[in-house]
Length: 443
Image (tube, rainbow, N blue to C red; front, side, top):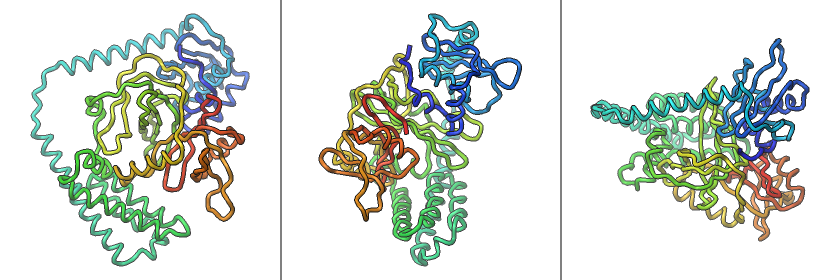
């Protein structure tokens, strides 16, 4: 059976902050009429607004969730509340699951078996697909992308020629028409980069310099796209990805696998209003390699919840093509999740060297997953823009980016040295989790 989670690990699965708060409140309420846990599964009955209580089951090995409530959030507050109660030791352990929980697990196993059989049948079926239509579609897409990139390059030159003095008052009217044309040209990555220019122009004092930096990076990307044939294969793959080309998961899984015991260190969700992205930071215990596992969900869709911070997974990871080699897909899993390994962090000087290598490989890198060790959180000296710093035993320091998790970092550290998991950005370190006394606290 997977080790008992902490409350923080359970709440890290919440789809949003309000669900996490509701789950915590529900866990402490007297609404639970029965609960139980067996190897790999937790179940419970929770009184709701109707006559019949809601039946909730959580498969801990995925994890996967089932609840009879009408909520469209996934996991719902009942599943989160049940996990919080289990994490707090308030759920009795049994040798076997209850009948309803066992039936749900059997149905899941049967569906998984049928899916595997269908996949095997498709793989064994002889194919006579004509590659020419696919090749023509790829050529047409490349022509559209190239035309969009050329138009963007002209727009960039216009901005430099006419100046950016009024960009802070133009708002999205300056960038949205260009971004829309790039979407039509099937270059969504470039479209997102152009949209971000408007927010940079409205970012306050010093915005002209920051805007010129961003314009230069976009120009570098358009120039690199025009010279794809001259670039090394990994860098060319990075440029295509930054422009907006996608690689199918099946193609990534067909590539070489890196098997390790992958520690799940942090999880962060972000949304652009249309798409929610979940970014999970994992690190190989043997290889020491950092990786990012991404999942995406549109309105009404569910994000992947199978990677729980504070656990470790013996699995194969397959990495997307690219010069930096960070983004990965989880392949075969070799057993159930277990406890974290002994995670150690690097000093500031090593992290800065890793940042320099990342920028050399991928100049458009905006953040880098890092683990810093033996850090103290200290106030920044007077007269510096940063409010707080993280300093190592050598006296080297980095700004701690102001974020909602800042106060959690301060509370957990309490003046003691900690290991900080986060993302290094041009502004400093954005904290995502803290390791203190062997326990991982997600911020």
